[in-house]
Length: 338
Ligand code: NDP
Ligand code: PYC
Image 1 (tube, rainbow, N blue to C red):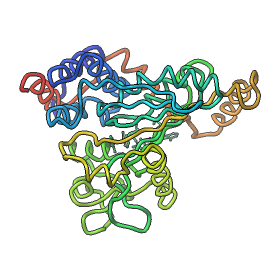
Image 2 (image 1 turned 180 degrees about the vertical axis):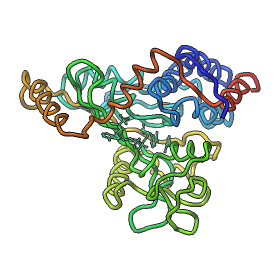
Image 3 (image 1 turned 135 degrees about the vertical axis):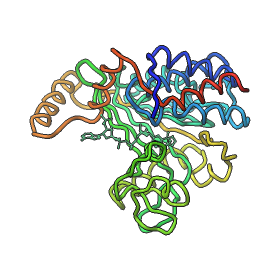
Image 4 (image 1 turned 90 degrees about the vertical axis):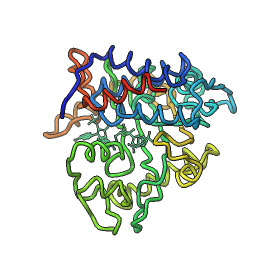
């Protein structure tokens, strides 16, 4: 496959240009481009420039408002709500983050409810920003039916990711960010694009049979939850937190209301932040947790979640990202063909 090499600055400039050319105002274009660029900067092919055609499709179809102006409201002492106004999630997140941080430091625990947003990205971005403020954080969002609940062979849950972050001495902390599917749909799409098989357990074909063919999963088949009934329970929890709690569409409702333009559906996201100085050992929590990480990492074969991605970040920052030439050409065309 032919590739194009881009610096991180070039990724950011290309994404911003493409979004601006397709109806995003400056603030929205910058926020979405920052999200896309962060994914590329951490080596996530599935949630970087690969998503740009989907973002553009939703701008062009009118499903997403590229000039949305999110509104922040303190709806309870520990709850901040941001109404994204039908825009992409990144600007709503940017606008709500400082209120969430301030609220979590004041109350010890606080939640950010993002409503009327369109989420198409990796979730570590939101939790790492809170970890940088010395907060522990969770994030949850639902999607559209893509994952069969335990016992079924039909997609019903979204790929429903959750992320968790914990501050450490220096660096970006410990962060896990995982779909409740055995594989994120984006990863399966990349495997289909690149002609790679996926592991058994990732999904079923249209006949309900286990398959390693990513196209069979995407075209009429279904993804499976990770860990059988356990991942299925997590997917159910994410539906309830990101949709039931926030008054936003469940994955099946999101699909019923979606115009299938290839971009992200309308939905919600819940983010919870906790201040470790407000629960137990206000001054010693960090050293105590570092001793835990030390013991954990002394075990042969163990690494911390997020460590592979953070190592890639350091490598990529010193070099370039490589994207398929076809994707690059498609994005360049989208910059001018509106
Ligand atoms: P992966 O299965 O690739 O990784 C999940 C987590 O496990 C990562 O934090 C990873 O850390 C960690 N991990 C992997 N291997 C190990 C190991 N050996 N030891 C310790 N930790 C490990 O991710 P998914 O395919 O589930 O999800 C990919 C992305 O898709 C996520 O960013 C998610 O947010 C996104 N997504 C977004 C959706 C949306 O609606 N917006 C829907 C679904 C997914 P590391 O990165 O360091 O390897
Ligand atoms: O990879 O499953 C996924 C996904 C859904 C929305 C954004 N990414």
